Amino acid sequence: MSDAERHRPHRPLENRRLLVVSTNYAPEVTGIGPYATQLAEHWAASGALTQVLAGMPHYPAWRTDEPYRGAWRREESLRGVGVHRRRHYVPPRQSALRRAAFEASFLVHGLLAPPPGRPDAVVSQMPSLADGVIGARIARRHRVPHIPVVQDLMGAAAAQSGIRGGGRAASAAAAAERYALGGAALVGVIHESFVPGVRALGVDAGRIRVVPNWTHVRAPSGDRAATRARLGWREGTPVLLHSGNMGLKQGLDVLVRLARLAPDIRVVLMGDGNQREALRTSAAGLPNVDFLPPADAAEFTDVLAAADVLAVTQRASVLDMSVPSKLTSYFVSGRPVVASVAGEGGTADEMRRAGAGVLVVPEDPGALLAAVRGLAEDPAAADTLGARGPDYVARHLSRAAGLARFDALLAEALGDTRPDAPGHAQGGARR
Image 1: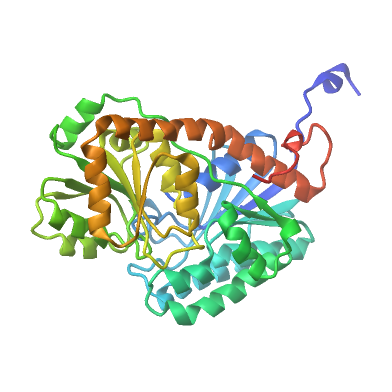
Image 2 (image 1 turned 180 degrees about the vertical axis):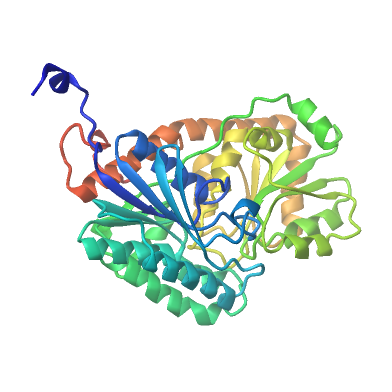
């Protein structure tokens, strides 16, 4: 061995071949896409030969992005990652049947045309059932570890989200999840509230690791007054803002109902999703409701910080199947959060842990309004709550900490227990 080789820093992932299966990937900037992207890029930068099997960009608008329309397959190299995109059906409206067609189309295309080569490990992002099944099939074919990461539970989602035909689809979704998780080396879950649901699918508790999502956005840096002026938000008018996906499980009609009760409060819905047009129709004639397109990365947190109160809402039936990724961005902004969610769910648990806002009962515009008014009338208390968000992020949700947990998860699945293995010093990935 030469002196140069002897003194070269050891890179535990160097020349490892890793495959990430994630329907959602860059350039998508909300939802699961940013996490899959940052994880793959991190492993590529650590020396791994990283490939991603992804769909065509479509979220949260549920429309295929213009540059990718009509493409059957697309091979790209993005920041050192080989991205293999496969065409799939994108439903303009959500129902159990349309969701099944979305999953089936990506499943078939992904299995027929997987990325070339034999990976050393396969990581799949769920709730996509297709991602989990593809990951399991590829891993079994090559006899390598499969590590599914549960971001949502689709079986529970079908039953709880209110999607048309969801009750009938729940058992089929749970069967697919059981297959995807059954042979996994380890199963990552983004919140401990998912553990009972994953165990109910037949996964032994000893194979479950908690790997929370991290904050993937920068801290706000713009002038708050200038941002409000640019957006037309008058000083003295409380602004309640919701950012992110506008889907069924969010139950965003509660914000429209609040706007009817309180014409002095400006309600802003920023983002996209399959319920956006229905919400616009419901809010027709309400001058205090604004719809904004998703903000780009450069100004996203500045817009959040310019609001007075940030809203996270879920239907009352949503208990153990989803923890919205928007919370990590909300906490970074430094503004108080009002969560209209079930008190028994993972979202409520995360709110209590951060201490950065107020919990109210779901689907109750009066209760939500009372909480918003209370914060608007006591700016000092609102600022105190809001300031806890960045502190919580710094302690628990930094990108470095989040990626280190995934390094530890991968090292454990690969059987790498050396002191210099990724994340070894953390003693595993349990939260």
